[in-house]
Length: 396
Ligand SMILES: Cc1ncc(COP(=O)(O)O)c(C=O)c1O
Image (cartoon, rainbow, N blue to C red; front, side):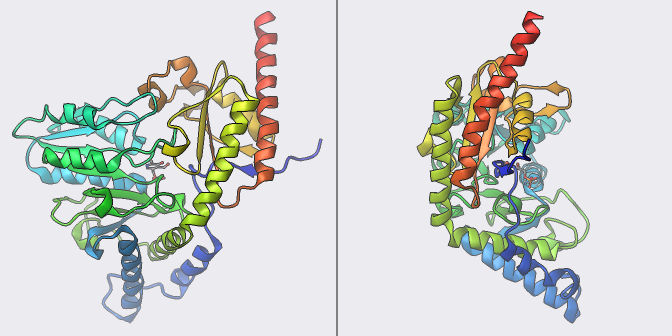
């Protein structure tokens, strides 16, 4: 048997670092290696690079430079947003979020709810497409007590089902009730506009490795006037809001990746859409038991296709696809040998047995028609093989 050609359809998990980004980062490992907090020339050079990067990202986010906090990843940005506001509040907090959020938000909220800090969590319902509605948010906000500070966290676009939320309307609704609004834009960055003023948000998280930047670096935008205590204490980096020596090469890389992503936005997005639509139409036609999960084409991330497939175990399917050279992912969080249905799909009202059969295919800059052809051939074959094994097992 010939070795399969490898096809990467998991860009929502991570993207390769763009060679232009690698090139921009290289001098900052061993040529410009000073600590940006040092006052000597080596330090000043490194500090200039960090500040130039801050200027680049602030321009894309349409905010001021001092509203940008560099972090180690999207997860840290999300944690800092929630924990930072809650610690600074000095009064009880009513936290409003949804089970369909990334675990960086939902597990943080669940932990805060149980550790005895004065946090009350309202879990917002989502529609069958994974959408938080203004009405649902308003209803939950109306239960905020006078002594409570309300903090809302709803993501721009969902990582498992690709649904884009009505962020502007949700942020407006939150502000009408005096709440602070955070959004996790980790999946949206590099595909949707990130202008914090038109989104109307108070805080926004992103992570470089989702838009062809390096892994291990992210940022949190925090609007001036929002009180935020650091979660990680120590030095006074990032205006005493995030301690720790700056990771200069990665910060430079993130700014370069973001700059390229928005310079090339139109070309990238129209390519993603064409590849994604071929996948959506193709999968629905070659796998009659598949159903698109999340929103329709107009209201979902350009790179993102996701499905639930009846009577199919996602882990088994991913293994078969992998053997056919195709890297995909599922919506289910799997501990080895202990598959659990996706919390996102459960929140959207899917029954557990269907929520176990989810498949996510996410395209990127390098995805080709040949890749999609290979997927559309391999997928029905993999499903047929899995079903044949099941049938043999149930008969035997
Ligand atoms: C929506 C969302 N938020 C947060 C994260 C976490 O980002 P990081 O991998 O940088 O910690 C991810 C990563 O998959 C994500 O998809």
